[in-house]
Amino acid sequence: MQPLQVQDLGRMDYAAALERQRAVHADLVAARDARPPMQLLLVEHDPPVITVSRRPGAERHVIVSDARLAELGVQKVETDRGGDVTWHGPGQLVAYPILDLHRLDLRIHGYMRFLEQAVIDTLAAFGVQGMRDEAATGVWVGEGAPQRKICAMGVRISRWATLHGLALNVCPDLGQFELIVPCGLVGRPVTSLQRELGSRAPDLVQVKNRLADRLMQAVGERLNETGR
Image 1 (cartoon, rainbow, N blue to C red):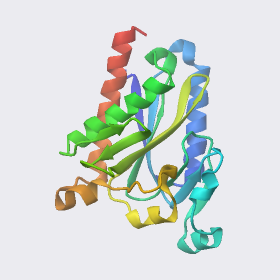
Image 2 (cartoon, rainbow, N blue to C red):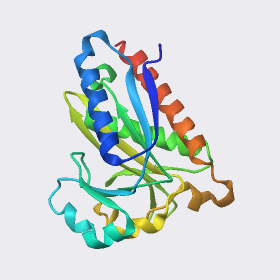
Image 3 (tube, one colour):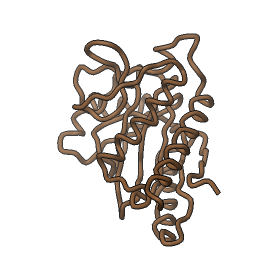
Image 4 (cartoon, one colour):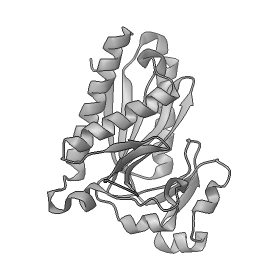
């Protein structure tokens, strides 16, 4: 049996996906002693949604009114993940790994680097060099300054099992990011695989499959290392 099972949720409302996450998380924690397979939920959020963390000042990084968001058909919700403000919608691959950090022998810093590396490896498969920024969690592309953010991350750890995760821009409407200060980082542009690669860009299904494979491999490697 694979140590990581993938659930492809297709397109789903943010609230429904969050409910699914919490149910999967509760099941994993309840059965922890039996070492059940960990889970990876993959989704595109539709309708589009802006998620605002509980970080002080995060709300200010939504730079249009609630009325304007309603006109555009964009939801706004508070979230219990880390990070700041981000956007989710069609064309963006969102991955919610529900992982037992005890079994993986990871704590929060190591887990964020674990996720970043999975995305960097996924991008490399399509000829894009992803990079870390020591001052800002996520994955970036481009030489020189400012680099362009292609993947945002924000997680929650409860009972040492993970919730939330990462959002990788494949082919979203990048104009939607103008509704916010993405991740609260002023002057840091956002990009996508489509913008970086043009006609050579992979479709969302290809990226989804590659990311899922890489995360399954990475989880298996960690379990082999820890013997758990």
